[in-house]
Length: 119
Image (tube, rainbow, N blue to C red):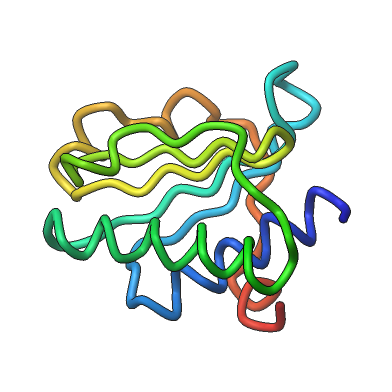
């Protein structure tokens, strides 16, 4: 599966669980770690966990894709799902503002939300 398609699917699963402020950044030309960063927010630890769970289960059941690593799911403040070419970060909003991952990639092209909704 192509990295962009995988990233769009992850974003769609996040949106299905009412994630807000969803941004998909194409960092492939700027990072040797991953091609896409998906950053999304949830309003509580439960919502952050539900968003991460929806992504993980959707990718596993519908596309047979498992994350290489999962971090932070117990706490629900910041969950990282590492799919290699796609890294998914689901935050509670205050934690997201504090770490400001988008600020680390100011020149990264953003995939338009319309493409996410079509996935």
